[in-house]
Every structure is written in C-alpha cells, then in structure tokens.
Image (cartoon, rainbow, N blue to C red; front, side, top):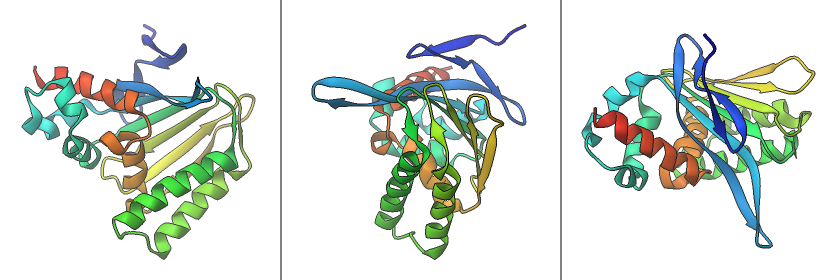
Length: 209
C-alpha cells in the first residue's frame, strides 16, 4: 500500500520517511519573507521524528499547542531527545548552493558564538558544509534532507537534484549538528515559525494521549 502524502504549500511530502525505521511526519511549514509587500517563499519544511520522542517530553503533558509553541525549553528538549530526526527541505524559490551555504554558515556560527562554542573545529566543520553545497544549484523542487542520528553526534546531508545522482555529506561535529537542529527546530529562534507551530500542534495532541 502506498504511503499517504501530505501537501505542504502544494508540495508533496510522504507521511513517513524510512531511515532505520519509518519516521512519521510530525510537523511542516515554510520559510518566507515579505519583500515590498509581497510574500516570497523560499522552501517548504517537513519534520520527521521517531514517535519515541513523546516519551522524552512527558513533563509537558497536557499543555496546549500555544503553550508549547511559546516554550523554548520544550524545543530544547525536543532537540536534545536521543531519537532519530529528519528535516526535509523542498526548494520553492531557486537558490545557488553557495548562497544557501552562507545562510547556514552565518546562522550556525552566530548561535555557536553566542553560546561560546565556536572554536576551530566548528569553523572547519562549517567550511566543509559550505564547500559541499558550493557547486550545487537548487532549482524549484530540489530536495535537501538532514538526517540527525539518535545520539546527535552526526548529521547526514543528502542533496537530490533533478537528473543527477544524490550527493551526500556527513557532518561529524556535535556542536554544529545540534545547532543545525536548533536552526530548524529551536522554538522562537528557529527559521520557520509555521513549522514550529505545526510541531507544537501535533506534539500537544500526542502528549495528551
């Protein structure tokens, strides 16, 4: 039986993503910005989480979606929960890999520097990510998938471009891995408020069971 599909801003996301086991889609949204009164959408986001994550978030049982959405401690616990997580981006507005790489580099660097965790190893890990993305060109519907290991020590980045084989890169710096997770999943500090609201909604229902 075919997996169901969820539409995120007219883009199809499978309802499950299989890594070592099937992970359900628990949140989705987009990144956008208003430019000259027009809403410009950059990419859609789907967040797949091991259902076991609910067991690590029990102290928020019974909280409303709104309460969770506004609680950064809840999202810190989500990021540090020792379960597999997958963040899948589908490009809406085409972008050069170099531009996207610079976005990641500056977002992650600023957060690490603020936490006093930006050392040579982190700088080197970020440079390698930028290098990996540098030569790519993300047309509409290109896919970037981040697969975070359960221990949060590594993240595999998979880029799927039309007509080309997937290319992969593994990030092995734990501070950088955690900070990329926070960029996408970190509550009020995350890049996509609509994704955070969607996760809060789903998890509030899961936590009320």
